[in-house]
Length: 375
Image 1: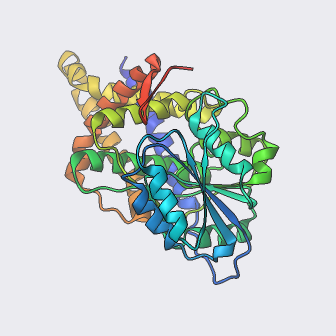
Image 2: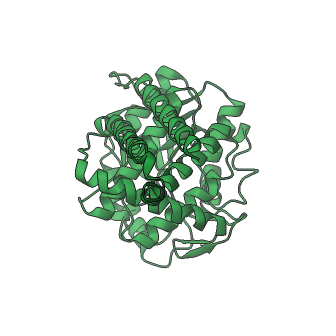
Image 3: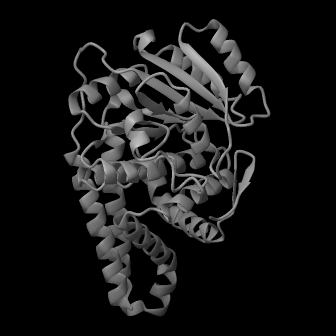
C-alpha cells in the first residue's frame, strides 16, 4: 500500500515539474507597432446576462483596434431578462459594428449552436470568442493581430484570469483558475496542448470549417473550446498556439455561491472525461487519486503510524509542488498568492475535487437556468 502511495505522489510530482518546465518554455509575447492586417468577428453567446453586459460593452467600446477591422456578434440564447434591450441600446449608440442575433438550437449544446450560428453570420476570417461575464483588455485584438502576423497559426488560445475581491470563495476560484492556466500554458510548452478557454479563444473560419466545426461532439453540452482544440491540433498540427501576453489577459467573473462553483466544475468535468488526449486522462486520474490520498492521510497516519514521517513528507511535497506551479501563473498574471489562504485551500480543493468527480459520475448539473443530463 505504501508503495502505491509513493508511486502516486511521485507521478504527480513529475507531472507538475514537467508543466513548470513547459510554462517557462512558452515565451512572453510583445507586439511591435505594425499595421493591422487581420479582421475579427468577436462572438459572444449570452443567456440572462443583464447584470454583466454593461461592463463587457464598456470594454468593447474601449478596444484599440480600427473599427473597420472588427465586428461583434451577440447571440441571444433564450434570455428571459433585459439582456436584449441592453445590447439593442448599445447598438444604437456605438460606432462599432454590433449585431444581435438569435440562437438556433440544433443540438444538445446551446453554446456550440450559438457559436456556429454566429460564424454563419460573420463577415471576417478570424473568429474570436469570449463570454458575457468577461471584461476585455484594450489591446486584446491588437495583440491577437500581431501574434497571428508573426506566428501564422490557425488557432490562438489566450490567457484568462478570474477576478477576486479577496473573499474565500473568489480567492478559491482565482487560484483554481491560475492552476488551470498553468496546466494550459505548460502543456503548450511541452507541445501537448490539453486545455483552452472559450473566454479567450481565436481561430480561422477556414480552419473551423476544415475540421467540420463542432461535429462529433455537439451532443455534449460543454466543450466548445477543448474539443475544438483537439480537432485543430489533430488536423492542423503545429498551428495551434498559446498567446502568452499580459496585454491579452481577459478577466472573467467568479461564481457567487458554492452551488454554482460545483455545477460549473461538474460541467467542466463532463467534457474532460470525453477528451481524446491520453495525457489529459492520465493527469486527471493522478490528480484525483492524489487529492483522495490527501483527504485520507489523517486516517493513514492513525492506522499506519510507522510511516507517519513519510505521509507528512509526501503531503508537504505536494503543497510545495502546487505552490511552485501556481507561482509561475501568478507571476505572469501579476497576482499575489496569500500563503495562508493557499495552505487552507490545499485541503479544501481536495474536497471540491471529490464532490465534483462523484457529481460528474452522476452527470446531471444545472447551468444558466437549465438542467443537463449525462451524455
